[in-house]
Structures are given as C-alpha cells and as structure tokens.
Length: 317
Image 1 (cartoon, rainbow, N blue to C red):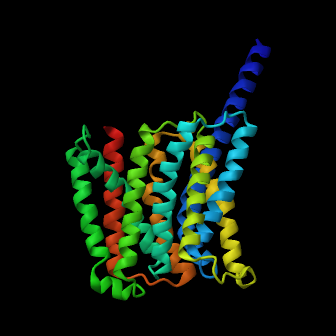
Image 2 (image 1 turned 60 degrees about the vertical axis):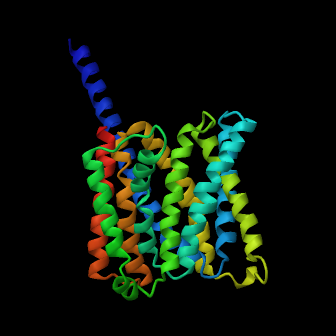
Image 3 (image 1 turned 30 degrees about the vertical axis):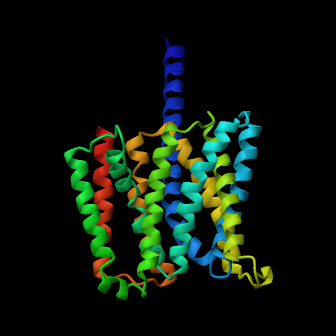
C-alpha cells in the first residue's frame, strides 16, 4: 500500500514538473515572438544607417536561409522538388523582395520604424479583403467587416497630413511603400496556402529565404547599392543590428514561432500580429527618439484593435 502511494506521488510530482516546464517554454516562446519580431523594425532602421538597404536585406535572408536550409537537411528533410523551388521563388518574391524590400525602402525615406510597423500590421486586413474579392473567395463575417472599416479609419487617422508632419516629416511615398509592403505580404500569404511546399516547415522557409534573398541582392545591384559601398564605413551599430536580424530576427524568433504552432492554440499564436506593432512603436520612441503624437497613439489603438477583431473572428470561423 505504501509503495503504491509513493509511486503515485512520484508520478504526480513528475507530471506537475513537466507541466510547469512546458508552461515556461510556451511563455519564453511567446516572449521571443513578441519582443524579437517587434524589435526588428528598429533593428532595420539602425542597420541601414550605414548599410545599403537592399544589400542589407538580401544578405540577411541569404545568410539566414542558408542556415535554416542546412539545419533542415541535417534533420533529414528532403530537398525541394523543381516545382517547390518555383513556388518558393514566387513566395520569396512577394514576401521578401517586394514586401520586405518596400518596408526597408519606407524606412530609408525617414518613415519612423513604429509607423512602418503599424502600417505593415494591416496585413490581416488585406488578407481578409483579398480573400473576399478573389474568385470563389470567402465572404467575411459581420465582425470581420467591422474590423475592416475601423482598420482603414485608423490608417486614415495615422497618415493624416498633420500627423505625418508631426511624426518626423515622413513623406507620402514612404507611407505608400509601407502600405504596399503589407499588401504584398497578404498576397504572398494567400498564395502560400495553395503553393506546393516541402513537408518540412524549416525546409520551406529556408528555400523561400534563399530565393527572396537572392532576388534582393540582384535588386541591390540594379539599384546601384554596390557602387561606392565601403565595408570599412559600416558602423558598429549597423553591423550589430544586421547580426541581430540574422540570428534573432530570422532564426530564434522563427524557431519559437514554429514551435508555438505545435504547442499552443492558433488564436493565441496569432496575437503576435497586433502585439508586434505596439512593441515596435514603443521601442522606436524609447531607443531612437521617434516622435509619438497623441494622434499616432489613437490611430495605433484603432489599427491594433481592428487587427485583433479580424484575427479573433477569423479564428472563430
């Protein structure tokens, strides 16, 4: 009898320890996705202070993609087929060449990193709209339509002429580039659902990073990023920011994200879409002295709220 009680107690304690350890892992993974991905906007701003923008972005994803690709192969993932490479190239072009490239270009035009993050947070709104407009698309629910309306109202408030003038003199072309980045991210996300991708998420992401990064490097050459570039002129802050984007922004945060998809509810994981821009706005204000007007704060609350509504109702649907 005593032996049975002791065995039961030992098993209970072991189970509680395992549950406690799992909860800490989930919390750490959420912290990584929230904080690291939210900080990448500011890291990009610091990186392009002395690094050509498309050259920086291309090198970042080629290095990150190579590491992810090799890791996936080491874990036994098969090489992508020719068709999978083709679809990876399309996704890489939409998400990285056009999406990330436009976001980087927006910051080059002196659009504050927090404002860029808020505009790119529009991605779930564009996804909902594109899904509705495409052939055999899905009509959004009443709650999602409400989220769409207040989301666009928040953008109108955010990019009002008076607010742009008070937000560091951001120009309209830079704002348009950030909006375009969120739009092509949405298009790429929708395309990826029907694309032929490797069974390993690591291999799929590595292939997309390699393709998109290579395109960004070609684009940097066409833009003349290489002309007159002097590696010796790269500042320590830009170099450290680049390393941060490669190691933490692309590797650590992505690993945490893919792990969360298997160990947490999708609705909880999706909360990164409206937590990241809040982190980005705060870090831009606290570490880079980016202006933060009352109108920007109100617009941020409206946009983040609209994304939260859309993500919540999509999850229910």
